[in-house]
Image (cartoon, rainbow over all chains, first blue to last red; front, side, top):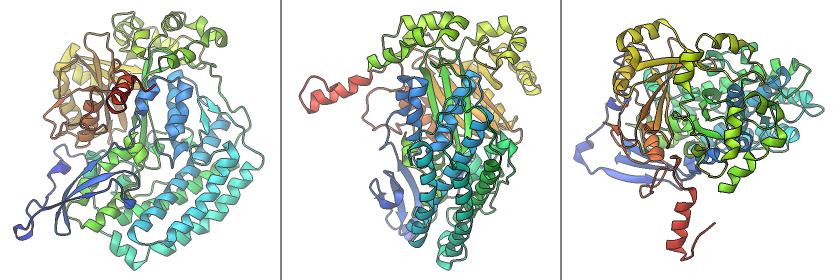
Length: 383
Length: 246
């Protein structure tokens, strides 16, 4: 894994000559393409149906989030992070709040930590459900979409009851939580866990041994663990390539070290293994939620944070395991009420870079499968 | 836009009695100058505006800091200061490169401030000998008042060591850096983004062009002296024939 002379993935054997010297074909996929999950333009170089290389053109959704941050206070910027990876807004908020807390040298109280973990894991499941539904839809299986959206709805209902919003939740505050849990929160979460566990088996029944699914995903978009590391790929994509690495375990944050869970890994680093890894992550998330919901301690939900947040001069990098990979915030404070600079290290952006390597030598139809399996959100790629 | 900076900056006087007492130096300076959207102007007083005061404090406060740090639980005590970072790896690097490296720890995070001339070598050594096999991120920070305007940072992680560090250097406007694409393939897009946002070029990069903004874009938005409204006004003047948009 750490051979210093590891090959750069850019040297992978690339078909650089077309078959029988036929004409190379360059076509555009996107930016308006239903299977790119947003406005992503992919320029494909093709030999017949075979992909010889591709280039991603991104930035269509660029909103200048990092520039906006410099003109907002720390608290004002909090809702903006929800709009990067909008299907996993809770995770984004967790990463940002924790980064600022670190900079302020405060820690959220235990009760807040537990509620944060529950909501974040629920959000991880919601994100994976959305991924599964759309990914399967891209490949041609329509049914899973209805199943996953039906069940995701239950998660969004919990969010809505908790903070009033379903997607861009702004659930956390710097220093803890703004809202106490509502009456019956624990019961709702427990009901949901009991409800969704058999549903995950149901998804698996639809796909795991489905012959069409196997044909479309096995051996497609392979990437080795070594290449994945060189390309900075994180999250389920890295784990499916056999690298057992999860920030929740490697560099624990929040109170993840109090919970017992496994890191599922794959072997082949193909689309099918990535599917299996995410399915296993559903179950691990359920395990974490179950442990957390039974042990929510009593106590305050906010740490002592000054009304006007003014971190001391300094800089910090803090990252969390978002559903898509390592989500990091690098914050520079100049001692004023506004951040001097915030840099977001988005997992989707870095993972998307691997698309080229994963698609070379594959068929055009597989590009769709690989974009789906990378689980990118363009709002986060472009920020 | 410039007004927006004012509004959040003004509440402190009434709303925040405690921290003002704790850290009298900074809040005063900030309140006084809440004028522009370009924030850097708020805090340039010392000649080293924000390399978060590392070099001077680290030397002076080295022995005192460990005592101050454990006490720093709630926001009351004085702000923590960077302390020297010591490890076998650092000892080795120090032995080789001497004063070109300044290893520090801040809030439990290790980083080293490296002289620009040593960057190619240090990155190579960290990647190939010290097993930092994953480049998490590359980014930059702009300090327009400083002679060497940019801080450029590499955030590195090592899987075998389970350790994350930052390498930081300072460069002047117009100066280039060596591309790290041969070391970590992931830096391809990261370097392009730094170029796009800051205008810092990386020598030897396979495809040094903008990544998030359109090719015809003017300027580099994350520089502090980039006017947010200028682009907008120019667009409406050309396309709509009116003076300004906002």
